[in-house]
Figure 1 (cartoon, one colour):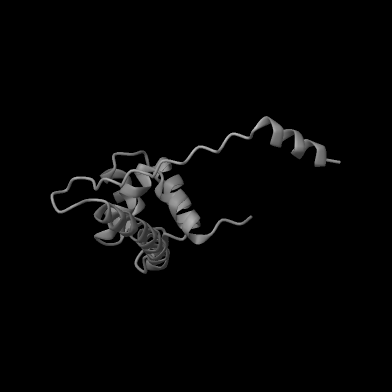
Figure 2 (tube, helix red, strand yellow):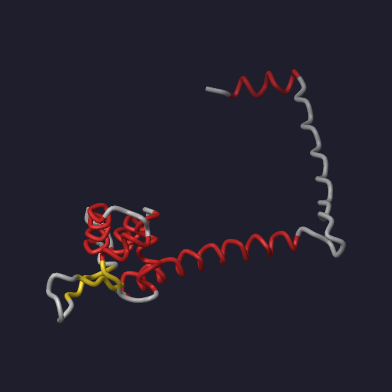
Length: 143
């Protein structure tokens, strides 16, 4: 089964280094070397993280017109919007669940906050014992 865009985003953001890259790119585009220096990493390691972020669609590289060798990385908005939409749906579900629990708790508490006591259940009347003579008649009817 193919991973959804939200799955790819969550996988990419699972690593703290990649979250750091995203955090740095929030302030604006940066070169790979700048990102590596800011996160105190070796450039080859940063290259691997940037490749995964590119493949997940979170960032894209843009060549500079002045120097084709220089790559600048920027964030893409779409994957973050899709993640936000999914998180809003999850939050709405839990809000609904918690609202239902709150209503239940309020119904079962009195004004002082104490739990309301249930009325005791009515005792069940014990079954009348079957007299031996009647039991014999019942067994006689069985096939």
